[in-house]
Amino acid sequence: MELLQIFWIFLKVNLLSTSGPASVGLLYHEVVSGQIITESQFVQAVGFSSVLPGSDALQLAMYVGYAAGGYSGAAVALLGSILPPTVLIFGLVVILQRLRRQAWISQFVDGLSPAISVLMVFTAWKIFERGGETGWLGWGIGLVSLAAMALNAPARIVVLAAGIMGILIFR
Image (cartoon, rainbow, N blue to C red; front, top):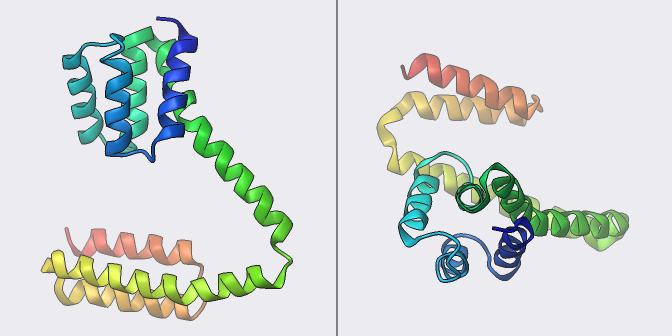
């Protein structure tokens, strides 16, 4: 299989879909209907990429790329998968860098901050509802972490300390 064809397939799939199930369907059409890999290989690829930690889409790309073209096929498929979102993010960063001094941008960010905070509180609440086995100790770690962040402790240190406390307390 030609490496340029593998690259084009994954570039096209990642430009035309939003990832997730939509990309799996489009990728199936491109690689199985296009007779690049067999249906059983594709099912195996989806299964492996679903159970392994990390991005399903990237693992699926590497698996299919490897099946079609070996190690170089996996590398080319990975490049075709990460190129579109990388270019879009860099473009967005350039635009935001040019606009950052405008007043409406800072007002927009100021308006987002409370919304993100409330979203994080609701997410934490849902996590505690579903996995309520942590009980009061989990709530204690959460409250101590919240207090540390309110006192402007470095966020990375707070998260790391909370994780270590969780390991020690919930063994």
